[in-house]
Length: 263
Image 1 (tube, rainbow, N blue to C red):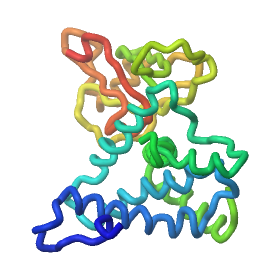
Image 2: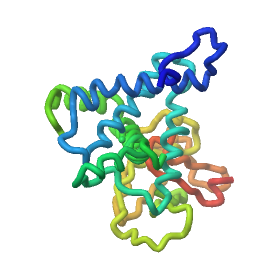
Image 3: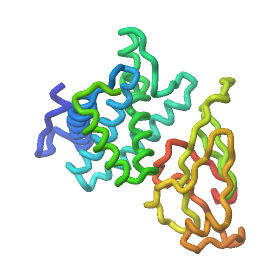
Image 4: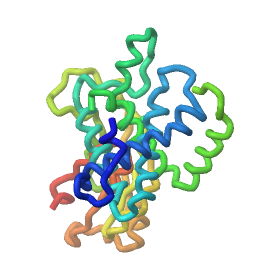
């Protein structure tokens, strides 16, 4: 539609919100020149790679168009938080889905592919992009970019393919549902990249310092917390020390704290 591509530079007929949408659409479709055209999945099962990358990269491209619009903060609101809402429903599904017939192809163009790679044609895309966002942060941008360049060069013109409850030193996790679910979660365990900040506000450090393994717990010692807080951590509850896990929502999981940490 023309309204998704054309805007009035005077601002008389195009609002800032509409301009945001136009920039995002153009950046998303341009991203497909690399993710979908230059490199194409062998089969529809890996659609989330196309759409997840295109969605994530579209925010990076949009950021170059309007540098003061805080695009990656919008990414957290429109992609990460929204797809978590969808993912908390029992109707949610993995981003990797087997496709056996043509009718199933249309069904997988949903919010999970785009954002996690809207239970409409953007759900898988949204979840896909948030997983890629998480990878970029726990690998570090330099390492992620190096791997991505290698991937595009090597595969070009070829077909290729929760809720985290925390106290200060204990991490547990389970699948988060809006409503109580009887669904068996025994197989829904995953590796969680943990970054945290203790007693200081350095939220730019998003690289994972620890990993929470499936069916396991992770205990952070005073030594871990002191290292995170540049030695400003004092193991004394009276000092009102605090711990923030998952800085900038770079990990695809929710965090809950004990009463002391919330206070």
